[in-house]
Image: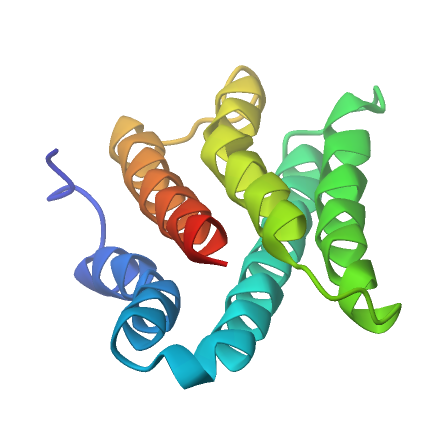
Length: 149
């Protein structure tokens, strides 16, 4: 995947966003006693990223001059989905694997929203490819943590 048309910091920092989840997965594998911490950290990180994406989509819809509610609804759903993924922890439920699984699947699907927004806003093709790489990596890492939960 060629990202050379994008600013280097965007690519480096974007792909570095995989490191927290990769670290959680590695920690689960090498230090089983840290399992609850790593599951919580992975769950919180996935939720935060979904909320971040929601904010980006909200602004993209605004910048594109969208009047219909679809882009804004998707942005709010992303943030609310991240929040809902954290509720089991807040309620004291003991098993976060389902939340991690749902959050991982939502992250994997998130580039579909970028494609939807790209109909009205000029997004560089390299950005869309980078988003697929970031979302795929983060989604798959989150699903891997869920599988080990």
